[in-house]
Image (cartoon, one colour):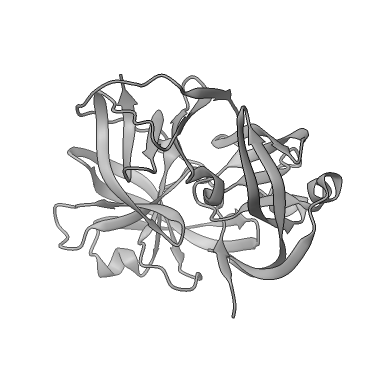
Length: 293
């Protein structure tokens, strides 16, 4: 049987903000400083089998964690089967292995599956990235991505953080990835968007924009989307109106790409880098955009 896994990709656009109401940050958060690469990629230190730290992109748009062949050789990761890695740009076969121990700060995860791939494929550009931290690790924690202070805060699943403000939306996992639904004023079907920290541009899969009758203006300008498995030509345009919770945003840059992934009911990607911060609660299944204490 063919096993499919999804990986994220990397674009670049702009910055938004939001607001609403709730209450109080708990103690016990572990703070990890990160650096930004290529304008929006969150890169954090990760240890593998006691070695490192290595530079990993934190990507909620990738189902399985990925490591380069160099890291696999250094840390003794052996591949035991092949899997199909699928992105918006196509599909490639890669080896899958298992990490005995993966460490993020003081947090340790044992027996985690990883995909071993060519280093240059990890982000499409950056030679300084050694791996991608995917949802099979991230969904074991609650976490806050804070772009302004350049830090990630991690909590155990049992520890809840209730921000006093922000746009709070229920979430669910679809093929391992975080999906939120955005109710729009002029469409009966809500937008189902994947919360993606590996992309900085709002993206819709075709024919979602046509089927949902979104108010979009297309341009004749093309660009190349880079992913760990290749590239694909996409169309740019502008979304006249987007509703996130009770907030409305106008004239947002958007990219359109024909769906090449097997299955999936999502309409597109909602980048975390469009916000100043994003809180993900995997235990209680909700996301808060621009949370504040």
